[in-house]
Every structure is written in structure tokens, then in C-alpha cells.
Amino acid sequence: MNILIVDDDKQLREKLRKVLEGQHYQVETAADGEEALDKIWADTYDLVVLDIMMPQVDGLAVLQELRAGNIKVPVLMLTARGDIDDRIKGLDLGADDYLAKPFSLAELLARMRALLRRGGEHTPLLSAGEITLDTVRRIVSKHGEFVELTAKEFSILEFLLYNKGRAVSRFNLAEHVWGDNFDPFSMSNFIDVHMKNLRRKIKTGDTSLIRTIRGVGFIIDSE
Image (cartoon, rainbow, N blue to C red; front, side, top):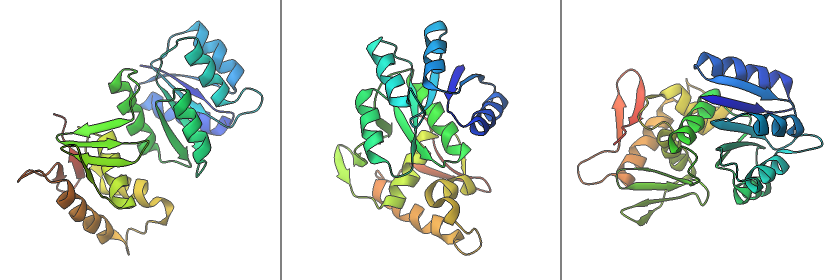
């Protein structure tokens, strides 16, 4: 898999390159939008990780030019945390997903795997069994009917679906949902409480969509 990382932060680019190469991806980088476009026109990529905030040619301009040129490579946008307008604009221009900075490497890898599985099909939907999660509208449905989740329950389900078929450790799950605010000593039972409530809400018959792997964490199995 050939991945292009586009970000004007040299330290972040090199960190991501090292991590992704350790995951056996082939990685190239670009420091700005102009360099990114030159590389995309000259080569074929399976995924582009594209920062929005860059000088001169920003990520949204790059994305717009790609889609205008009928280049359908999956694009994961990196946005500033809380910058909702940029996320919406990026999705409207044809981005496949977004990730707010700062982010955990586990979450980045999960979102990348989800996009690579889709093979470039532009859809905001994640699903398993009778459960469907819309990452844009932030809606969960079961058998086509709306399921009301708290923000934390939604984040847990979303992260497990991004990692469908892969075990997610309690630490990585906590890092995704609570970020730097998570204290493993005083908040360890928070995961169990939210997980219990989430399982109850999305349960179908006697079947639990989320399976516990003792000593490891949780998994939603691939169909």
C-alpha cells in the first residue's frame, strides 16, 4: 500500500513516516499542497493523509483539484480540533474521513485501515451486523431505527467499528474516548460502565456485537 502524507509540520511528517513504515506501508511525504499535487499527478497512491492548514496551497484546495481531476484516491483530512466548518467543507469537497489534531496513532491507523478496506468508495457509514453508524451526521441505527447514544458511547462504538476485526486494547480505547484526560488509576471503571450501557443499547436478541477478549480488550468481529 502506497501512502502519501501531506503536512507542513516536518516533525509530524517524519514521525508518521516512521510509524507507517513500521506497519509495512510504503510512504512518501509532501511539505505543502503544491508538492503534494506534483506527486499525486506523477504517481498512484492508495491513500492520502492531507492536512488542511498549510501555507499557500492548503489541503482543501488540493482536495478540490483532485476531485475535479477525477482522482478518486481516498483522502483522510487532518483538521484543527473543533474546526467544524473545515470538516464539513472537506467532506462536501469529497474527503472520505477526517481526524482532528492532536490525535492518537492508534486512531490514525484505524481510520486508515477502514478507508483502505473501502477501496475508495466514498461513504460515511460504518456497519456491523444490524448496526450502522454515520460518521458525518453522528447517528447510529439498529434495524434502521435510531439508537440514542451518549457522546462517549458513540466514540467507543465508532472506534471499534473503525477497527472491525481487530482487537482494541483498553488503553487505546480510553486514549481515543477521553484523550489526555484519562487517568488509568482513578477512571479505570469508566470504560466498563460505558461499555455495559452501549452493549445493552445495540444488542440484537441474545447476541452481543462487542466481544471482550480477556486480558486484551474488545473487538467487533468481521462478518
